[in-house]
Image (cartoon, rainbow, N blue to C red; front, side, top):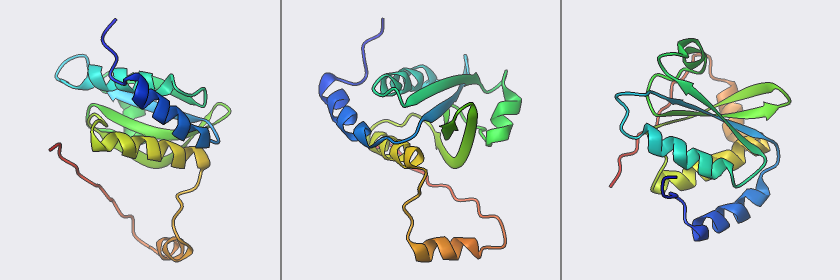
Length: 148
């Protein structure tokens, strides 16, 4: 078995934070067998995170073999990750995506986003929600982060 990526101290901290998880969340991982240097590490990291709470689950897809599912969720990069709310057998897409391994500073963002999706609330202010409701054209928002 490969060495664990999360040590006991980190797992303990995440477990405390995950006490705030409300409803189930499904992580949809998209990788490739070849031409993806960080897919194996990303998948291992996600499995370790999912093990921390019974409110989390993971589904694993291959970007090439599962093109229809990838297209459905707008995933075109590997490793790719979708965070979806799970309501019974249904998945609710809240538009949360990660491209690349969510390690370093992005790990805390992953944990925070899991809590947001679990709570089914973006925690945006009322004025922001009103502004967004008035938008007429689609907006494609991406945040890029580079490791330092």
